[in-house]
Image (cartoon, rainbow, N blue to C red; front, side):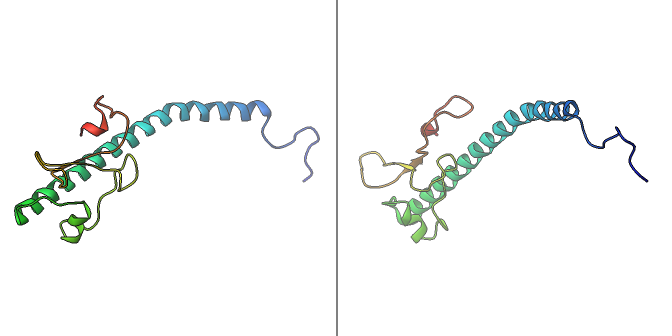
Length: 127
């Protein structure tokens, strides 16, 4: 069969614009929720990594009656497989170490080195 003249197949410009507008509307609703969930996941991973580091420091101290000198000591002593990554900075060398009272070379606690604030308003460095 031959196509009838004047009955071209395809979409008109208006139909394409309507579809693109609908897609843009859906994306404008979904994108902020996606970003919010990614931020929540990073914060949950940060809490988990801090808990693992603090637990390893406590176990190191209980076993050796001394705090580690550096985070790598926890890996060498097999308290951790590797120094965890700070999920906010995406690096493993940005952890801020807190020495025990009266000492300056040991590690009694660790905090995030990330700048900025969490969704609850507290700075990451205070965690």
